[in-house]
Image (cartoon, rainbow, N blue to C red; front, side, top):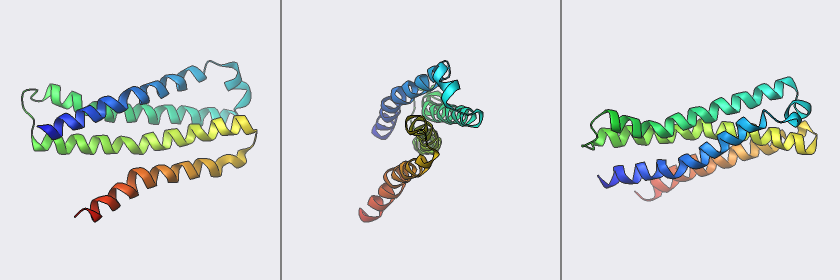
Length: 142
């Protein structure tokens, strides 16, 4: 029961940040600077980033939907395992969406496409902190 509480609390904590980011992504499209500063291809990249963040939101919200529509009076190991996988799965589209939008913002600020390496570096930081580090810590704690 405590594992489910912790898991749902993690989802509740992460969700407002992702939703805030999603809102900023949507607002950017209505800026004249968006159309002037980004090529058509880069605008499509932003659309992809929006879609990836929306998918991340769906993954983060899924545990609550599963719990409410399943058996809201019972918490099973299966629910905790599924919800954990959904929350972890949200990190992939979130990482990609953030990295794409980071590239686009850096490109607009610098006026150069050479900032792609910064976006790749950001992607590597996410992979290290959200993938490698937890795996490594889990192995050392055994």
